[in-house]
Amino acid sequence: MSMHPLHHPLFVKFIVYFNGNQDYFECHEVLEEYWKSLPDGGKAHPLTAYILLATGLYHWRRGNGEGALKTLRKAEDKFQSMPNEYPVYAQEIDYTRLMEDVQQSIGRLEQELEFEPFPLQVTDRLQKLADDIEPSMELLPAQSDAVVYKHMLRDRSDILSQREEKKKGRR
Image 1 (cartoon, rainbow, N blue to C red):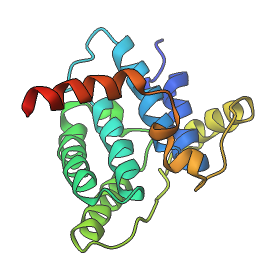
Image 2: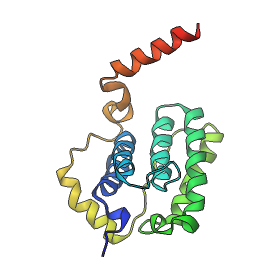
Image 3: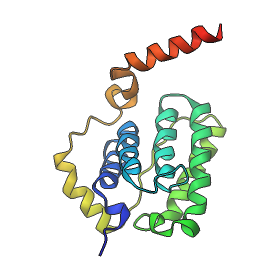
């Protein structure tokens, strides 16, 4: 019997980061690693909905409302087709509640309201996997700058120099 795709250790880490300390940057990192490891990991893969969700919340919390709105709308589109196209990825999670939370977040963004996190409601089975793995993970304090501005605190010199080169080309 094969493992349920949402029981994969990287998805379980995603749940811990999402619910544990709202480290949406790490959510994106672990899911991208999982997604890229799959033979069918194209842009239409259902894991991309969860990646977009984490990215949208990361942008929103940092005050990038425009980026957050665009990203969460893409996530919503992907989540809406999930029960029909990839039902297994809508299992183990309270899918109805997730859709409500995503739509509520989009509504708050449209009204330019402040960031409001929400937890992913998961089955007892998935929660137990998360509880078992969490002690081995080093979670940074929720709402700390290290979590909120994580992309700015890592070494990005290569990315920044590429960006500068592109800017020069546009002038």
